[in-house]
Length: 219
Image (cartoon, rainbow, N blue to C red; front, side, top):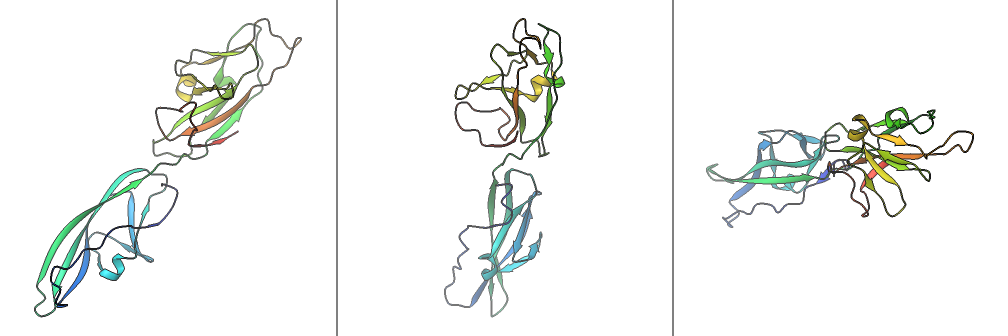
């Protein structure tokens, strides 16, 4: 995944067709997608870099920070005849699937003051931001509302039946989603508490309920 750092490549090596031990096998990097790096030990391999058969077994790949997706690189397997240095080439494309991992978002909350029976814009209550800037994540807020409260002007609301919370998207908040207080509520009758958690979701379509959300969050 995108946060695992350098990972040993799991791939079968090329095989020499000539079995008389007169040939040696080596490899050359032909192409390499932006977003990944190849290494043999501490040596970084670039396009046109060569490596031995023994080094191929040590080949590792490292994705750039906070990047996910499918990346490719191409190696030429080279058979070299010892007697006359004659060479034969065979290319192979390797696919690297870097799984996205949600990073902890930021969260800022504020004390609320409002007018009885008047909706409060959520932007006045809390806000957050993503810390992964590769555009693979969406920002949501898991909100625990007091009895009698609701969220309005938020078409993408996702209720969580497991704990009674509601997920509201950053997009809806920016578009005007609001908190609707309990009817006839005033500080003379009660002072409610709203709990909120910022949630980074690697799937841009939003949280999946009631399945477990594969995210990191900050409360």
